[in-house]
Image (tube, rainbow, N blue to C red):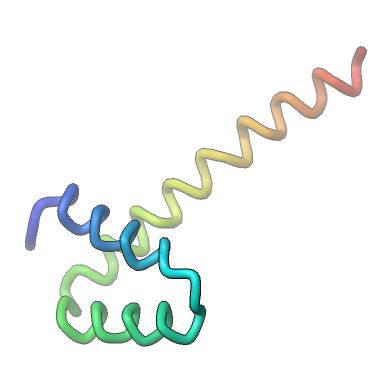
Length: 66
């Protein structure tokens, strides 16, 4: 398996594509080229997203209390 930084950089590059159809094609091509790294990529993407909502939920109750 390649370095996590390389994998994450490739995923960020793909996610920056504006056209959804091209983005989907690139995701499919990336998964076909690196099938052993797909679980790692999912873990990276889900881990990044799961960190954001708790911060937002912590700030929401504080603002409601004021």
